[in-house]
Length: 145
Image (cartoon, rainbow, N blue to C red; front, side, top):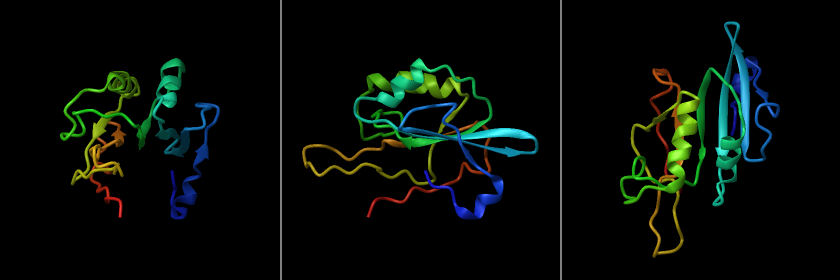
């Protein structure tokens, strides 16, 4: 996750006390006397970050964004994928627990390109937002070059 230097005045803090996992980065910041969170996740092929989140009790409120490479295939966010992943239900339960909803970019593009011609390209990079967060629910994802 990258935080633009023009946002330094917001004073983001990396919060290892909330999630202490190598593939989960939780940042907090204050605005109008309230604390807000942004979470970035990379979940490997073994879903270690997902398993960590399932086993960790974190009562976070005011999560604005949860984004990352989740390595979870599902027809709900990738219409070219014909199946439903076994991990996606747990993942969606976690997002629901944090009161987040799957967001879709203005133009959906593939986010994972395979070198194997027998495999299909996929959408596995996702963004979940707090509902009614219209200020940032209008974005584009640029395809890999």
